[in-house]
Structure formats: structure tokens, C-alpha cells
Length: 444
Ligand code: CA
Image (cartoon, rainbow, N blue to C red):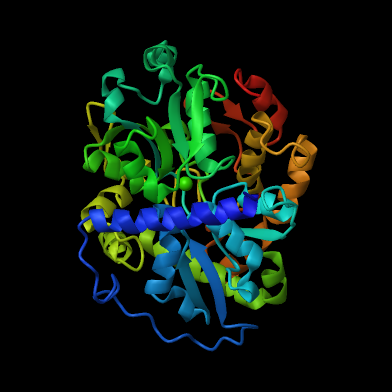
């Protein structure tokens, strides 16, 4: 089977999976959509843009919420843009659709795990076909978790796996196979989080566990069936595992790295270059949605909007808890009540979330070097920087922020957020990525 055919069959399997899942959830069909009783989007304003429409893709996890909110609350329309936001069956489907572009019946861009936009630009994950893309903004920080099956509840795994020394080798001996951990797309965010977690605990992810790809919509069923013992994805999926008593949350990503970069808005470069005014309108709408939904008093309404069949098709209660950062952590289900540990869309203790700092988008390529994800494309820090500088467009975000009249304090003046510290004490200094790589004991 060709790679392309494999992707298509994967995508359709994911679609069937999510439809079945939708059926199991007991969610009644939503009649008017989640926005029925929220403020209706205003008609798209005429702002003299080069185009009035853009097709964007999303995956139903909290990272996509600002895009959904900007559509439903009329923030894109206010700036003259009609955004067609369509659900993607899986990350490979999103990737294939952006290669097609709108002209080919696909999408112009949307929500991405990193370094997908960088690697699509380089042709590293698209069978060599280079489709240059631009990263325009960060959609969300935190809001992701690592879930583990109730079958290994007794192991009481936590963020610090050094406390569970011997568990993974004992598991292999007892079960006659390696511990299985899943992510939603290889060599991107979720793979990186699960690897960071394991390696920080002294577990070599390439030797001591089996890593596999499972679309986020299939993680629930997969864990129930014993396809894997752990998985990493965006909420509400890890929280659903807890809610449905299929598993528990050993760790949330906010514990691994506070205010960490998560997923991003990225669009095909040919679309951006052809439609510069519309691009700024897109960023403006996103920024305003992120500002609105970041406020605690608006989070219940966000959950309501997302829950509709059209968007996440997930019970409001599950979404409300995860969007407010109300987690039950660990095998003993300890309540986490600090909203600062939940999904962040605008404010953080490290400043504005939305701004696409090159120091943060670069980190995903530095991790790619650590695990030798993309040989021939990312083999040196110099290559990583060159690719990242082309793809990350801080300048467009700044233009949008200035046109919106944001206070100067909310418009970063540097490409670096400064030094970043992980839960295991490791420091990533963007000025010296090699020192970070050297400090990692487990790498490929
Ligand atoms: Ca994610």
C-alpha cells in the first residue's frame, strides 16, 4: 500500500471511529448548534480585503477552541473574513488537505502540532512535496495530558517516573511485550511530550516502550480495548478517560513545562502572500477571540459553544471541567483547582500566549534533533534555525496587534521568551540550544 493510500485509509478509519464514538457518548443530536443561545455572528464586514474567505481545518481538542470561538462569536466576521472551519478526521488528513489547498478541495491552513508546518514547508512529511507555510500565532498553551489505563492503576504513575523505577522493565517481563504509549501524530507535540516524560524518568522511549499513533477521537476506545496503556493528546480526551473511569492522569503538560508552547495557527505561504490584508484580519480575529475566552467568566460559554455536534460533540460538563483546568490528577484523583494549570489562551506568567516567539517554535525542531526525527532535513541547529526563521512570522502578528491598538506591554519586542525551565530542572536557553541537547541524558 502506498503511503498516500495508507493515510487515506487511516483517515477514513478515524472518521468511522469518531462517528462510532459519537454514538457511544449518548450526546443527543444538537439542533441549533452550540451558538444558538450565544450571540449570533454579525454579518461579515466589508473591509476591502483581497479575499473574504479562507478554509481552515481543526481537530476537536481544546487547542482549536479560539478558532471555533472566533467563528461563533463573530470575531473573524468583524474583521471582514468568513472562515470555513472544517473538522479533520486526523492529523494525517489535515496534512493531506493542506497539501491539496482550497483549490484542490482541501484547506488553506488551520491548527497544527509543531513542527508540522515547518516540515510540510520542507516536504519532510509530504512525500517530498514542499508546501511553504507560515506560523501566525500560538493557539493555546498547556491543556494537554498524559493518560494511563486503569489496568496499571496500581503503578500509580506520576509526572516524575523516577518514583516508578523498574515499572517499565517489570511490565515487559510480566506481559511479554513492551508498555504501549500512543500519540496522535508521530514526531510532533504529543510524541514529544510523551518522550519528554519518559526520558526525564530515565526511560528510553526508543528502547523500553512501544510508541504508536492513534487519532485523538479513538483514544477512548483504544484504551478501553487495551490497544495502549498510555496516551498523550489535547483535552478533553485525557479528561474523558478519567470521567469515564477508563484510566487516570499521571501528568498534565503544565506540570512538565509551565506555560509551554502547544499548538499553532499556520497557513499556506502562497495564501498569505496573495492575501496580506486578509491574513492580518485573520490574526486580529484570533487575538480578540483569545482575549475574550481567556477570561474566567467566559469559560462556561466556551464549553457550551464547543460541545455542539458541529464542533466537538462532547458533553458540556466534560468540556467545562477541562477548559477551566479542573483536573483529577494521579491514580488517587487529586483535584487540581488552579486555573493557571489549565489551558491558557492569552495571559500567562510568561506574557502573551498568542505571540509566536521564534524561541518557542524553534524548540520543536531542537527536540526533533534530539530524537533524530527528520534526518536529511533537520540535522543541525543551524538548519533548524534557518527553517524556523522562514516559517515563523512574528512580524505579521505584531502588525495585527498594532492595528488592534494593543497596549505596548502586550506586544513582545523580542524573538525570544528567554530561558525555559522544565520540571526535571533541565533548562532550554534559546541562545544555546546545543547546551540543552547536551544536558539531555537520554536522546537518540
Ligand atoms: Ca496538543
